[in-house]
Length: 168
Image (tube, rainbow, N blue to C red):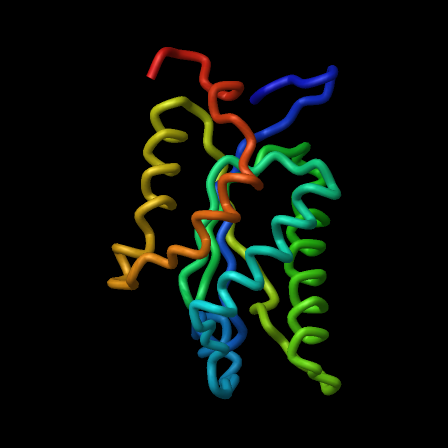
């Protein structure tokens, strides 16, 4: 746990997926039939990343790693624990709103699945390993690099050195 301005914050590895791209155990139990998954092409990945970068900047969020991979997003977020849900809700909601405006979608449309996953990062080695995992996630999924993301992502990231307590 990190204390900034007398407020305890935590570091989280956050993931969320596009609508209908995953079929959970809960969905199986409830016999939910899903439709076509939302699949993001490389241009849409860049657009969504631009939207998220705007929110990160306007809300002064602390993001330390980020990647988007067709069906999902990974990021490392530092925040006060009781603000995490609201931050993720805003990132998902505003990016959907921007996306719908850009594509002139007037109907009910879900870009992201309802839930998200998070894991607390509690030591330097876990942080370094998670950053590397996120950084190379496209490779893991056999996706080509999205070179246009390289001009956006660094501008939305906070300096990792402020988090490390040990020499890495």
